[in-house]
Length: 531
Ligand code: G4P
Image 1 (spheres, rainbow, N blue to C red):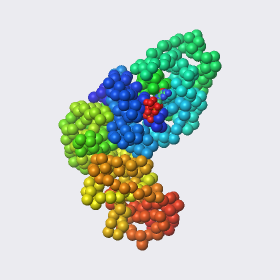
Image 2: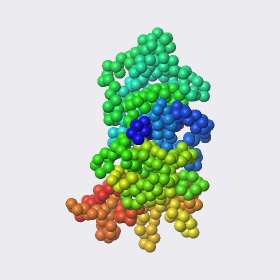
Image 3: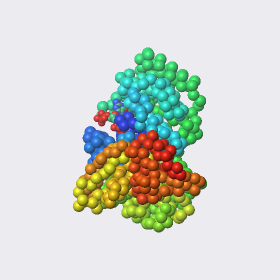
């Protein structure tokens, strides 16, 4: 069991949209021998879709709004690649996926450097000290200066950047990469249509005459200078620092041309961690332990449009999973049989009979599962909650057709359970207004789309000015939720509004920080809690 766990590598690829995450994913699949699958990816790419884009909305918009899991075997390793949505609006889903991985590959566009989304995603990795590997992509296009790029990574992300290889030129003058560890140069060959494995010719090192001949004199001088600078600048490569998230190994290449990808994959597998222990009640649970345990990091309803189903994605933390086994949902104390378990590859599912620490399985037919739930062979383990992110956009959702009320409610409740949006209610006389809260407004489109396509319920969205939500609590050491405040007993600034959250607890919505401070200053004995 331990050896099975040790050969697993569970990671995600993160990037700013368009930096090349999809292209890199396709190429990695090739190395795993998933040729037919990668082929489909490339063919469908023309329509701006990927193997992990299975929802129609994704196809229409050409963005990945949901995530799936790809796995393949390579060099004795079992590689589990958790795909993450590529759009900034779906970051909450991405954050949850990042709680289920042991390391991350960050893709940067060599011509653009660190972009907004990369920075945000990196913050999440840093909070959990997740090891990060960097792939600087698109070196076949004019790229920023190598040392400036490395410096930007260090400065903007506050992490040490260790170049595992150095690019030899860029754009039309891109000639390949110099592998610092092996001391060899790998020449770039442009292969029409993108090679399966770009041919790599190794030379005798940076001083080899064929390196000098291949480069323009200024490109060669730059390479020598850069090699000398990085040699002098940095301490030696420390695998411990990589594991601790203090150093990111940097690889250069071109995903579209499958160049530098194998060096990235080999380096990644060598230095990335096997499944890591996870904290339960203040103590780590060892992946090699006999006890089966895992946690739900994602719920997705109606993945298969033909069947109304609901899949819980479970990251296994320890022990061995066997189809048909029973496990306790530690939150409810109830025992369930895990009979219907799948591996996921875009739309395709295959039954999983056995899985180990580091693997992700899709569990169907267990409706009681929620995001963050621990599943365990007994009740001895309970994993820390998955952090929630406060919604920053709020919209009222109307049901224009009263006859559809039941479907409308059912859909909303289900999508809220998935964590797609948060659901609130605003009391208004005898009526209750449904309010959605999300990290980004694109999620509202997604809710509308899914309500219509999966539940047959049309809806209308009305945007609001609120940007934050807080619980109302009593002040003092034994501070408690206040759940029965009314507008008259509180001093509520114009623009703020009382509401109820999905669990029926009272909350207050504010348009700005100013309104929130006003509320705190004008209501004695009351304080604001988390959202
Ligand atoms: P994403 O998932 O991070 O959003 O990026 P994606 O892989 O879809 O890549 C975005 C664009 O960048 C694509 O071009 C892709 O072909 C291109 N690209 C990826 N890697 C490289 C590279 O190494 N060099 C160059 N020159 N381009 C690269 P597109 O025009 O949007 O699509 P397509 O018509 O090329 O498929």
